[in-house]
Length: 134
Image 1 (spheres, one colour):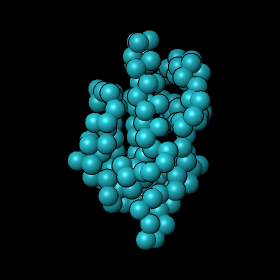
Image 2: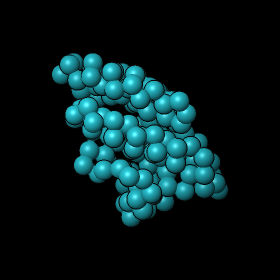
Image 3: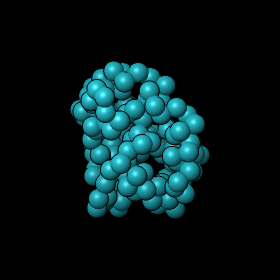
């Protein structure tokens, strides 16, 4: 996500907030991580202000920043096989809009649409399965 996103980041964060609520209702202990894809602009203060727009809990959700643009672009490609690109002179960032389920070994197990028709029940079932892989 990034805080001045004009398209997919607000619905993605709203859907992840709903997923967080559903996971908590099922007593599923997971860590949710949102990576800023615009770290030059998204300082902790901006991320906190962005998150305040949603009824989310920081108990198990981290909003990360503090790395370089090239680092997040390389990390996204290597870890998630996802493109992140901030065109020069632009304030919007090109990025995938998926949620990723990451296993205990740090490898992506599955990805889901984070913008529309987010499959909450499928994600919860997959998280339960993944938690048995420890």
